[in-house]
Image (cartoon, rainbow, N blue to C red; front, side, top):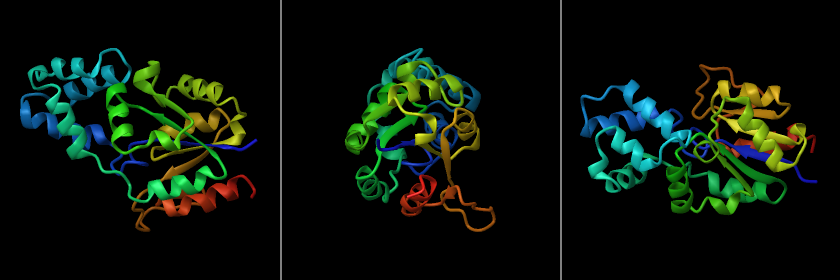
Length: 209
């Protein structure tokens, strides 16, 4: 039985980790400068838990009249795919099952996966907006493992945030922290990578290949 590699999206497959505060908040404030970051984050949280659809997110912020153009513009103009991901994913597919575990609005995730043809890489996809759970809630990891039908130790979860890796570790999964652009000021240990090119070798090491 092949092992599973589970990828986070923002900060791993896409280059910006805190997309809400670094990208979404300033983008929304261009159209609605009176909105605070807390108000935007709260609206995003509701949408990323599937409590409202993506249109409801924009409507809550008073921008419903700009939908769907504003959503398409945000997704097209603000997010950058890591250029190394497709080639590395294709290589990893030869030896492992690949899955996705992401906190995101359902419609946004589906749009980005279609735009960048990401669905071809993943045999299982768990998005917070689809299941009503968000990392680091342990329940979303347990749901993922049920879907993968594998023992936790036969899976590796790759995320850029420690707070999301800790519950995965507690659930028995192996973990890798993706520290893009680590310049030596941080200690990059044996279970950390700073680029996709380092990933295949570390995964092989973790599984004793």
